[in-house]
Image (cartoon, rainbow, N blue to C red; front, side, top):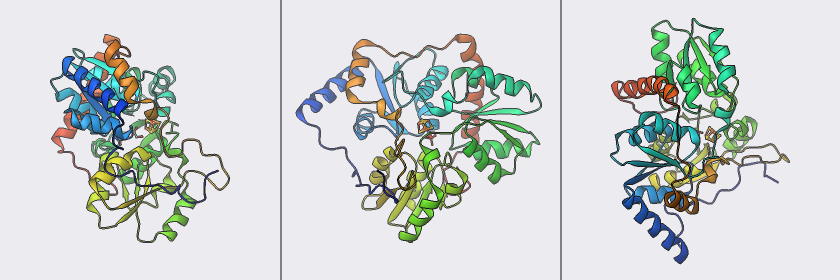
Length: 350
Ligand code: 13P
Ligand code: SF4
């Protein structure tokens, strides 16, 4: 049973636990195969600490979903190994058709992607032809192909503000919480799809308010996939990268964090000595469904990574007609990010 307040979270510390002999041999084998296959490991902040450390140690990258796409696009490796969820691998493949893109686990999906099937979404867009279609990166390649823009949480506010300034009305999918937040910050006219993230959807505003009272000095860091009541209590709302930066830059020594707890690894590394508490995810007596950790991100591990490198399994393939359409909306985001010199700030700058 979960406690009324956050699960007391032992800070994982800046490093993954020292590798046991078996694990050390496994890591050495993976490192050899990465070099032999001219492959690079790109990991999301929500994946296991040992995968994040391996990516860092081998010239790969650990980041948010926008920056993972950018890194994979710019890196010279012939194979990209994605430690994350399927939409991240698909985005990498859309941008790099000449590269081999492998997922550590091909069943690693995302509830936002699942909540937005392409046929229903296409019908929704077709019913509102006067609106610019903006979709979150957490969608299938086919949904991206139907969109005018792709955004991630780190650039969502800027893109919506840009479109709003041009007098454009927006269809927004699939995350209703992120959409509601962006709408509030920008004042844009946005029609929202009804999707949500099963992890962030479970953060509870009332319990968070109680927790804030119990930790009055703590800064509250919230990912914008969280419900509006949780966002309202935040000191900083932002992408995973923005939240890590805030943990480092803000003077607070304690933070309550409303996002996947995989992020604590990099937070602790960025701000050693500070304390990070998980925001509460369920009411008293309720069953914790996600416990602030994405079940699909958790499918990524070292053993599967070694198997994938050995077998070449889990390669991402995308229909070329879909890819050619989807790349337009993704490239638009990357170009916009570059031209607006993407920075990550605090509240209102997700
Ligand atoms: P970021 O783009 O902030 O990394 O978020 C991706 C994601 O899936 C959050 O749940
Ligand atoms: Fe999708 Fe939520 Fe998992 Fe992110 S944390 S990959 S949005 S289900």
